[in-house]
Image (tube, rainbow, N blue to C red; front, side, top):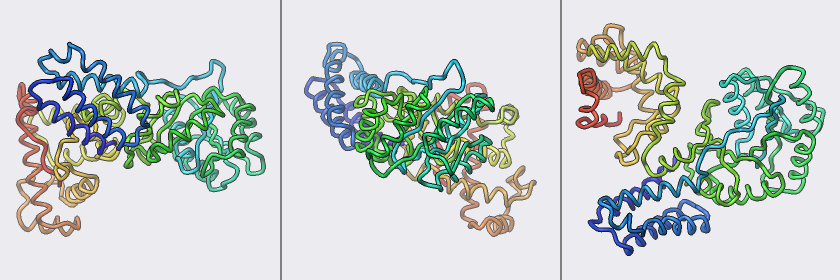
Length: 444
């Protein structure tokens, strides 16, 4: 997420930290570079201009110029102003005191509305709520079929009527929800390839008929500045309550995320970070600002771990680490647990400083598949006692996993390094020594 933007900002900050003394001149030079990076990321030019002016007002104060670590202080100011531009604090969905809560989903075709509707239903279901999905896109039969399929995957009912119009479907779905004790109604509306009058009139009519508690505008983050222009058009007609940025796991440059709140005046409430139906995150401005500046997002990482990791397995693993009994079987278990949290690049991207790691030093999801195949091709004895794996066994494992003996050797070397690290953790004060003295093993 925003790898290119993060790397460019990190290069600017590196030069700033190298300055022995901070003056108004080199602060101005640094901020010119930051402005250029923001514009390259497709941030709205007015937003970028105001952002730089706000940072400059604070950065040329005596507090900064006389600071022992002025470079770090300016980076902190940039972080604070970035959080302010992104929205200062998270904004949740407003639920009705009298169920059902009606949530209207709007946006252009191809922005990911239908998938987001299912993701939102899955998210609300995980919180103990009982959602109902509504297929109100009557122009694309495939959209109705898609929503029914997605609803089946998360065990959430879908209300549809292939004979009725969109407004009637929306109205009837609310009655259906009341009769069937569904406390949240999520209406997936039709999209078009561009903003047009017919589309706007229909979604306005749905709004007037069901009086939604929440209107969410879904926008493709990869469309950059066009996303902001579309958001303005929808907001003028619908006065939506919040935006959702989809495809944030793609090569989004960051412009839409940074510009949207400042130009439209509406909060971003969710970001979609993958294709799976659990790949949805609530939008936290301070966390995204931290990711953009390359400081990671430990809080979200911990939340994901708590959500996906088996607590009983974690306790057993801790005991094994303390006794220096970490095996290839445990290694395989941990790989499978990490995969539940999403693509490895996203998980690692939440760790501070990962944007500075060499590209070949970070394993990818394909590497995990290869490692998994190798370990699964081993016998139980080999997984528990890797030292018994001789040349003949390595050739057999390579044939069984579709890899090479060199791949086996590489994995065994990495595992030995990991065992040493685990032993260090298991000793008193080991975690601190580990952070100071060990580097992450190179990518497989």
